[in-house]
Every structure is written in C-alpha cells, then in structure tokens.
Length: 178
Image (cartoon, rainbow, N blue to C red; front, side, top):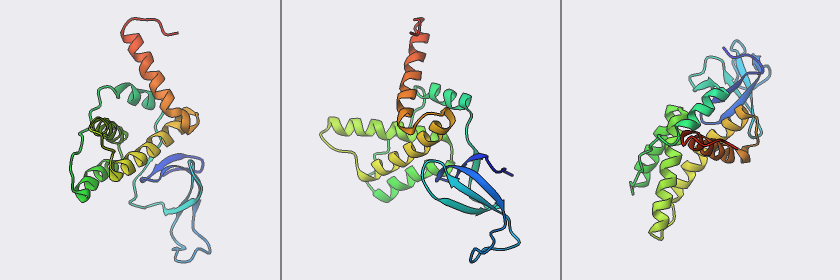
C-alpha cells in the first residue's frame, strides 16, 4: 500500500502524489467503509480519488538509475513501425503499448512513430493524426515521469536524453567527455 507523499504512476494518467488515504466523507456515491487514495497530479492539475483496492494499474515511479539505464538502452530498442491503414487496427496496436504500462514499450512506440514520420516526410507526406496523438501521449507519460525522477523541467527531458546518449557514444569511442 502506498503512503501519503509517495510518487506513483497511475494508469495512463501519469505521475501522481499520494496526498492522503482514507474514506471519502461527504462524496456522493462513495462507500464510507472503503479507503481511497487521494492523488494529486504532478504534471497537471486536478485530483483523483481511487479505492485503495482498485484494479487500475499503479506503480512507484522509476529511480534515477532506472531512468538512466532505460536511456542507455534507447539505441538498441526497436519499435515495430505500424503501416496499418485501418485506423481502428492502428489504434489497437498503439493502445497495446499503453496497456503494458512498460516504459520500454512506450519508448519503442515513440521511436517507431518518429521513424514513420521521417519516412513519411521523405515521401512528401505528413504523419497521420492517430500516430501523432499516440506519440504525444507516450511522450507526456515518459517525459513527465523522467522530469520528476531527474528533478528537471519537462521541456528539458529531451535534451537530457540526447546529452546522455551523446556522452555514451563518446565514452564507447574512448574519448573524454568534456
């Protein structure tokens, strides 16, 4: 069970802080004998009230070492580019990455959609709205969690990733990092 102050990932909402745990007094429809997490969204506004025994996915946020290890694996992560033209099937494939709740799957999705966008651009086409929507949501979840874990603003996460990957390349090549 999580404790007040804990930072968790709640479903596909993103990082939330456990504000309190207890019954929801005065809330219409709330079971007075049931305990609820009161969650406050870290990257956004609003509160979420969820039963402690919910089936909705929740996990502690990653550690800094886990984030850095994930970033270090990015060059090897390969996402399957979805060329499906049927929007329902395309959405289902992308949705599966979110349902796993694994950062690796979201990173693979981001890389695959990015590659698909580059390929489309070379053909004079633009990336479809479904691709863009899922890529944006994956970025929000990944960058949101990484920003909290790393203690940096959301808009600096992409730069942090690029700098870490560049440093890894230099280190692998035997050059000094400066």
